[in-house]
Length: 484
Image (tube, rainbow, N blue to C red; front, side):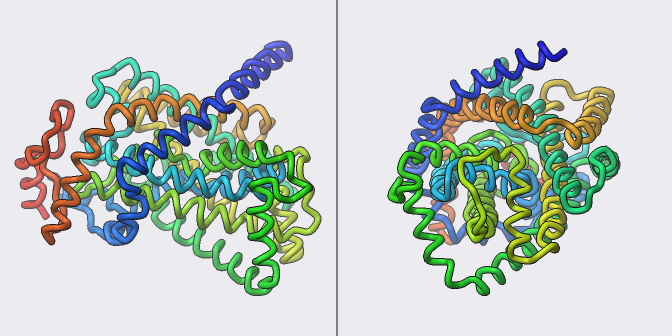
């Protein structure tokens, strides 16, 4: 068994080196710049619109029930985004890449917001009805229906089901277990059992229960976390300018201590930034597709804002806590980034600091487990929609939550990085192939705004191939409006 594990670790290590070198970083930058430039930086140009559409009410579905609102679709994606990457991942990036990693996380977020707009608009455009009466969609759906590439769609669906259903959920559970073991000395196996039970209670309730739970957890947990960091900033106001200077100096190697670490800052900033905000990875379109909205672009805007919220706000808040920590050592082993964050918070708040981070990571990571499961379920249904298959998947996810709580974290991180890279490459190829469709759908949205109308999308009004687009013809939409 040890020989197999060693061989697997070596294979994963080689794949990580290949995928996370100049290859993937180059693809992310070039693709993100293409999406941003070709859309005239939609992530800036329509920034105000992001807040407007976030307040939209959900449409009434043909069965008379309300669909998942734009806000709840945002909280599902935020639930998956805002997790260990925001607390443990940021710590790992800073320790391994220096303070400059924070700057490169910002860069990948700004570029990624454009990518998120494209992929989420496509997720909405090619969505389909599910058995519960709601919607589902995502890259697998637009790869099959938009690109007519069934094999690529199945390949992606398998990747995301394994990555989010198992690998990422194992990571979230592991971080919760590490936080509570460190703060309270609770045995990891006990934490794993409790997490598995609470995960089962929600995922057996379906997509709407997941949306309802994350709709409560995400705003509350984010507000509390950001409020505490804001108070710490006020108390330590004299550290703000030096901290900003340290981030920029380290990012470009201007400080002697980080002169040779620019590459490490870029790599860790991009790698952990992508894990956190998920832009271009192909996960968020699954949440975007679930919303009952009047125009696909609305979810593109909301999920673009989600990238800003995740990285520019929540990740930056964690970075502030860590960079205030005077005993922080760079370049050391940081596989348990949560311990670094707990130590940094304890330096500011005493023993309660570690307890506070444990509570935060419980909310962050638990909501991520729910969001991750949602992504896995949506893609499993694409591969094979059958109650027995779904039941087995749910049981395996619950089992992985327990296993993740007690497993070695290093191999889990490395495996997740490989899957994440493969997903990103596959998805970006698909988005580029369908970018012309997004341009036309975006123009339709812009034209309606200029005319002073509330944008409503009808497939007949736009010159695109309607094959594979099931939910946007005029008759279907008018039928939904009659039920409202």
